[in-house]
Length: 357
Ligand code: COI
Image 1: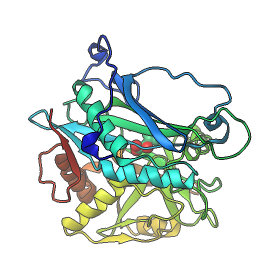
Image 2 (image 1 turned 30 degrees about the horizontal axis):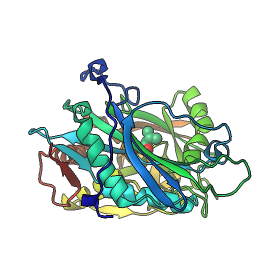
Image 3 (image 1 turned 45 degrees about the vertical axis):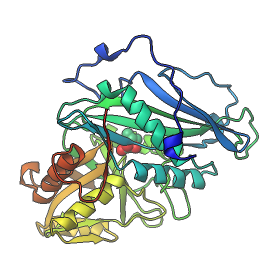
Image 4 (image 1 turned 180 degrees about the vertical axis):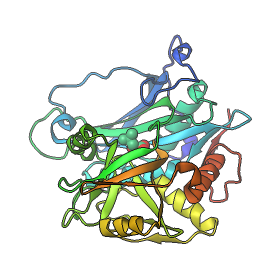
């Protein structure tokens, strides 16, 4: 079915909850827009896409996703431009990545028409929930989970795909203190670290909490074999500026291929900076720090956008980075990216999907 031919039936709310939203005081992930998209996979195909009032779902206690973790998700954002049009940032990249995660988790691919048409219709209905406020956005959470009522371990035959949205402010409220993880592992070669699978996040909670109890906001994962090379951090890819060059670990089977990561690298090249995608060792960071060459460190992610790192802890020592205001590359790129996403700068890479109301 082509995108044009699909019109998803909608059951709209009798009364919007929008008056509960204070545009000037939005916390991440706590308030949800009026509607959600739901589609079910059964008998080998996606069926019955519909838009419903946002609300609870009824599930059997034997729902297989709850037991064996066939559950994947995406995170994307929409903004409003000066004319009130909605601007979705790189939705097709999220669509493709969701299907890569689905393949790894032995789940069916969602179709482009349900994903894109569903998003368009959902966003048009809930356009008032897209905050016009600077630094805020509508966060969009597509996800898919296994719905077989069966507790034998096997790939489910039935799945649910859902998209809900929530207006959000900043994910991290301040420059981060992070610590390099010397013991736990997020992902190993051949595992599912590149997939946005729910279990990857669940397994990260204990090590992250341990670091938080020691006074750090997040941890930096290192490679599974030697704990020698930097991987990613919490919900973000990582980037460093060493001696004027923007350096980031390459994506691999253990690292999520971040869409913000790719956008930042593309803009950095456009702006004429030297970009290196290569392994970064903990030793290299320490040496650069001691030589005064570790100029910037930051995380990139949809929720986090560009999150500055103030301090990196390793082996009993804190490395304190230059103040955020002095960081040329990350500040310049963050500003440029923000302008593209909100329609204030030309979109020469065709990243923005416009929805006119
Ligand atoms: C995102 O950046 O969209 C993420 O997936 C992080 C999320 C777990 C809050």
